[in-house]
Length: 141
Ligand SMILES: [Zn+2]
Image (cartoon, rainbow, N blue to C red; front, side, top):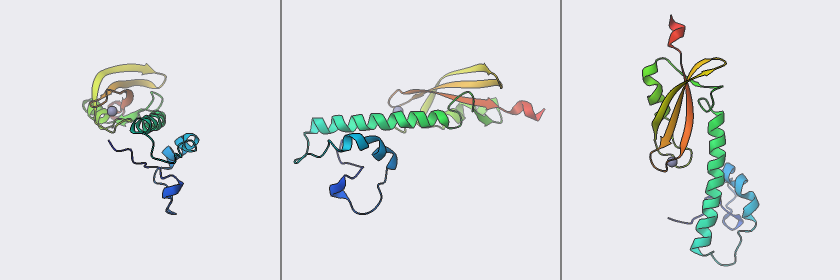
């Protein structure tokens, strides 16, 4: 596990814009503190990196909730019930970007009709997330 920074601090400034504006914004507060004269101990560095990663994951989870399928108010539409789970498993883990597995497949009633609620679990880190899908086949009748 490298402790190489992806958000270049000023000493690495090359004039090009940072690659990860999102995580840079998230760590802006802690970045000031992290300016040691010598390289931080591996443990400190990895702890800082973990904290930074946690904030990034938190932001990704919030973003995932706002994207289609992230909440029952805005489900992803599919044409047939047979592809509901495949559609859910096409999503990636917000934490580690690994594939997800369907843990539970339920039908929930919402103000705007029936919606499939998938409970997806990351195959790698075990993170659980809900994913909402609406089957549009009734519209064809
Ligand atoms: Zn994961």
